[in-house]
Image 1 (cartoon, helix red, strand yellow):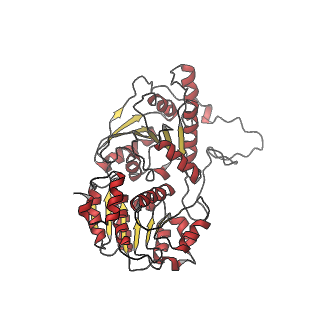
Image 2 (cartoon, one colour):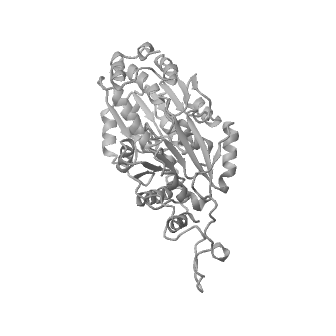
Image 3 (tube, helix red, strand yellow):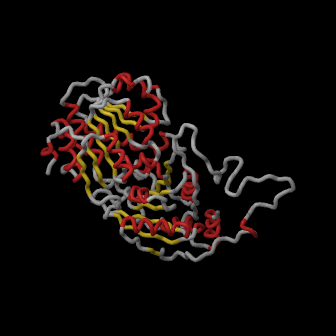
Length: 450
């Protein structure tokens, strides 16, 4: 089927043709006709299958057929990166239409975002936290909303945004068309669809909660202290041309990035401590090939839309099945082939087995050629505490914590109720040329100690 057979506006078809797309993906073929009939929709599909265009194209087509009267479509997404990427898609497909677009997300000034609301952009794309901050007192601006899209709904559930979304939805007109897009459909998500949607039609492409078949998966069973050296060893292979590395925490991401840079590997980072401009710059440099490795926390797992990622490395194995699926979904997109590599230490073994039961698929255990994974962890002092003996009268924080908020301190929730990253991970590093000299390897082993 061609795009022209889907019943889209001629101006949109022209823009789609100019982007180079010739045939709709399965989720687009199934979802677009349903949306054009003004039906509520639950769209389930793997990442990289064109979900954004599946709701963007029909909404733009319907907006083009009616006069503008303020904000008419609201798209809610979990991260700033995803908001920006949806905006890019909307602007590309609406280039021949007299429609205006505004984005709302944290990390930047509220003033231009408030001004955009007051001026009445046709389409608003927002993260739930910032939108809730500025929507109060401006409810009238949303009085004409005809379309509500909840993108990456499962991720918003994981990140704790559901209470904010409920508050936002209460401020919107009841008579509207609601579209619910996700890569997975859990029982919790199904409950939410009952709250927000009216007699929805469900479109499901592929199996639920399973990684794409175009992604080759493997596990390296490795001690925590050897992870840094193994990462650098693998990066000696030029086939790892465009690599996305996932860590559990932002501090771990920064440490890995520093070690890779010290080893001569161009590296960028994306996590919640990076400003919006820093994130966008890192994404653009990664997309343009200026950096080879991008290290990220799960904040980016569903927000990075970059073609050509050859490998995803789970430096820290994710605790949740859905996180694993979405992480590795950054490679092997559409019809491309990609590879997902997971570093698994002893404490991760149960999580890996649970994932295999969940996906009903085993993940091969492999070993890196030319890498010695039997090197023991550096010895600890008696009792496992490397700190100097306690002085008389000295009061110490528990191990793994720091009174100065250091890299291993554990942080609690925020006063505003928004999620915060908590647990810590290991680090990485090696010499620039990937030398296997005992002196260099030994130095890098020390980085991963707990």
